[in-house]
Amino acid sequence: MTRGAREFIGPITFEAVTGRPVHTEIFGPGHALDHIRLAREANVVVVAPATADFVGRAAHGLADDLLTACLLAATSKVLLVPAMNDRMWSHAQTKRNVEHARSLGYEILEPAEGPLAVGEGSGPGRMPEPDEIMSRVGRLLESKSSLKGKKVIVTAGATREPIDPVRFISNHSSGKMGVALARAAWRRGAEVTLIVGHVDIPLPSEILTLKTETVKEMARAVAEQLLAADVLIMAAAPADFRPATVAPEKIKKGKAAPKIVLEPAEDILRSTISRRKKASVIVGFALETTDGIRNAKEKLKSKELDFVVLNDAKEAGAGFGVDTNRVTVITRDGKEEELELMSKIDLAEILLDRVERELNGR
Image (cartoon, rainbow, N blue to C red):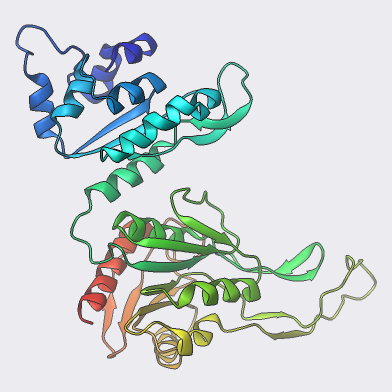
């Protein structure tokens, strides 16, 4: 903890919460070489929040406290997470310090936008949420993934097909599985584009996200990104049907219910077959209620997938809107692998392991 940090909260609080010692001073009996030892032990160094003063001192190589001395002695990757008033963040000197720190090899996670302290309104300057910081740390620690530098497209969530200006046809997809896959691929070093319909969870700010509403919009977004994609993971739940016509005004309640004529929506996965990048890996999802294996194998074959991920919409803990999933992975050679119930975050890692094996074999 720096002197400034200790003005906000005492070291004893952190010791009580973490059960670990808090280091504060560069000099003291028995602590003369703490800056060297701590730097050598670190796999990654994260400074969060990093004030304008600290960014300036780090950029100019000062070593007047324990933390800046650690940075100079560190050989691991360093992540600075600036947080300050928006006017301080936009100041020309701060910008120069940030760019100089980048030129020295420091990673910078830029501030988030939102309400600022002391009634200063809203703007860039807030410290990003811990989940985002940890996601960036995971990416820095990843070194061996074959997804590193690869372009990965992931779709997530439900589409909404309008009936009239206030009603639509949709489903219960929350987007949790797709977002978990996108986060995991990004952490492994991939260049990820997340294409979403309606989702019920916050979207990762570190990932390029394209928002769509209808199947037609999602299909267009996939087509625009597809040519450069090494991996396409279709985890979204696009509608199979849509109203043949959309009423221009709200359909009013009458004596008889209105008749809505449906037509097939675009088949996004099938439409990609002729435009896929050579040697790309294509993954589909099949949510079924009956004849799951047969239907999933038909999808695997007709849409020319490398593997399909099957789950049962009626099984507890494996359908829409929950944090867990239990799936069967079916490969193009017909092999079936039943996985146990697990969190969607853990499942994302397992599925990406299989994607990497496919990529390595090509």
